[in-house]
Image (cartoon, rainbow, N blue to C red; front, side, top):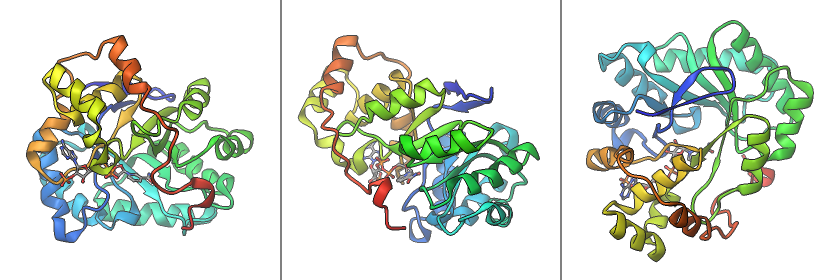
Length: 270
Ligand SMILES: NC(=O)c1ccc[n+]([C@@H]2O[C@H](COP(=O)([O-])OP(=O)(O)OC[C@H]3O[C@@H](n4cnc5c(N)ncnc54)[C@H](OP(=O)(O)O)[C@@H]3O)[C@@H](O)[C@H]2O)c1
């Protein structure tokens, strides 16, 4: 699996397994075991997803050494200030059956982001987390962290798919050496219906999902597609044996409508 070097020198697999909406009824433990079997080594979860416990069971039973796994999880919006961070972290670790987290993110901006960030910096300095980052942060939210914090976020995980490619935010993050990760890279399946991508998929003899994910990693992004089907887990990983030409990369870039499909971080309502 290809990896990317984060701004603090740690290496992260470019593709992770997304687990949003894999709630009890979809058997998160079995899904994660299948994803690990398929070759994923990075799992993306969040306290919000209510599956950390089952993921913890999978991670402890999979037989893969902990240091070969990369776990990302996210502080929910009830973590509002510095002193809320450590207790939330303890709960995550207990659910995930680990004593450290690889990547800890602020899930959505809160009122006092710098205060929460201070709590995360403490965990980082105590070696409880290997990297810290943010999610759903616009430039002005990141500015708050850069001006008050002492550590630059390693990652910004944001909505990003062919209709919403976030070019300005990506340029801003590149300038600050912050890796950008695409959530809902497949637009929750809707992007698979785009005719232009279907044409490319037929030409490259790949699926639309593989075209999108390959486009993302070729653009320097990291991705976390979600699926509960093991054949699709494998399909979404099988993107390292072809390259999209510069001309076709431009065609996909041209699909950008700068149109958000989900919540706006300035008005998320959580
Ligand atoms: N930080 C945040 O605020 C935030 C927000 C949203 C998501 N996320 C993270 O990002 C991850 C991915 O986003 P997402 O789950 O919203 O959407 P997504 O990965 O864009 O799309 C998932 C949907 O696509 C389908 N799918 C996946 N692979 C497929 C394939 N090869 N062929 C056909 N259909 C396929 C899945 O169906 P099946 O499951 O039925 O296969 C599912 O319906 C989440 O799971 C979560 O970890 C983060």
